[in-house]
Image (tube, rainbow over all chains, first blue to last red; front, side, top):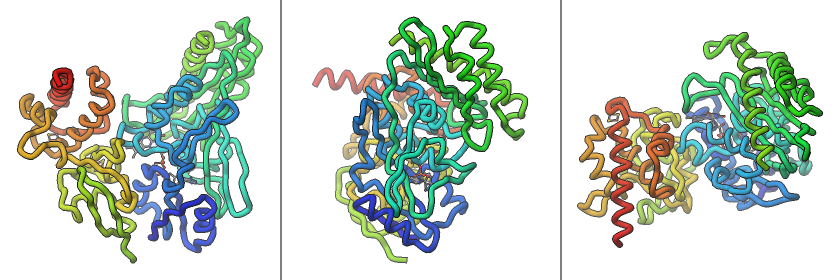
Length: 286
Length: 162
Ligand SMILES: Cc1cc2nc3c(=O)[nH]c(=O)nc-3n(C[C@H](O)[C@H](O)[C@H](O)COP(=O)(O)OP(=O)(O)OC[C@H]3O[C@@H](n4cnc5c(N)ncnc54)[C@H](O)[C@@H]3O)c2cc1C
Ligand code: FES
Ligand code: FES
């Protein structure tokens, strides 16, 4: 295994594009090193982007935030403006492993590891975030939900990597929230999760919503019908009940030792509802 | 396999070493620098026994490559005491009997140091959440939490007096 620390993104792309064996990008390493240790992967080349200054920076852009691929969860949690704009994204990050893991783990790594249970991804999707992909043929921006292809697989082509993630500005009266169900309160993997964003107008009518479920399919699930159930309403009891049922209906989970299919379907609706209620509270407070 | 040359600062002193690309920072600290305070409990980020502070962030040394330490500032449990004088955390761990076998202790001490660096006045809840990634099979955690709270209080007083 070779370890390289290119000085520019273009040099990084050149390295992974030219590698004939297995190449892996290293961000925080909290997935990659565990996989190396377990012998799950044996890369010929590991490319560490952290010496490229831009990968470690959070920059303001169009009212939103551009997050370099190597920015740690701990740094993001300390970012006041991001915390105020998108509390749901911060809630997801807070649940990733321990203080130690968060000292290293990145949004980009969480996304590119492509676990359906990744805690930061549902709210990123709900916020309308995009990933900037750089490859031999240039740069492109794609919605974050299009990065994972299925458990452990991404849609990145050979030689491509994620340079940054862009989180747009939150519209006025927008609230977000992320909740997950785990048997333990700490250091566990989501059995079901829900990340939501809700926007109200001045009269309290919901004008936009995005309800995203984690761990109930091979990729995150955007529950469109659930969002439709509250858009255009004052998000009263009837709308919430309809939304909950639609969220459950959108879940297509598997049975495994951590939860049965029936349980996950039920809990998907419950978590979506609780997350929407919390997001509403936040939207009304702004 | 060609070796990688790395220059870092460990506990305030320059440390130069060579390592293989696959070696972790934990391997390097223990096997190349002779700093065996950080322990390998799991090697997969679950137990916190390998906790060190890397550029002011608490991390698991088992999840960092040695090569990533180039130019970094690293603090380990060996840097806590000042000569013969124990760090308040170390003293309070002894006073409160916050250790039994001691395997987890260096990790807890470094994690607690990092907590107090970030937040000199933590609540019990904050201590428990911050240390949730440090596992102990012996003590039942309560004495550890009390020792950390007590050390933080003493350090605040000392700062106040100074
Ligand atoms: C003890 C422990 C507990 C954990 N708990 C949780 C949890 O509760 N919830 C959760 O969601 N996750 C959890 N994780 C998993 C992990 O911490 C997260 O997925 C983390 O966000 C990964 O980020 P990273 O920067 O460390 O990724 P890395 O390990 O650096 O990378 C992960 C993957 O993404 C690829 N990659 C990294 N950067 C790029 C890039 N720029 N472009 C293209 N590909 C890239 C890598 O090649 C690798 O395949 C846990 C891990 C540990 C060790
Ligand atoms: S040895 Fe690093 S966390 Fe257990
Ligand atoms: S004292 Fe034995 S593991 Fe903590």
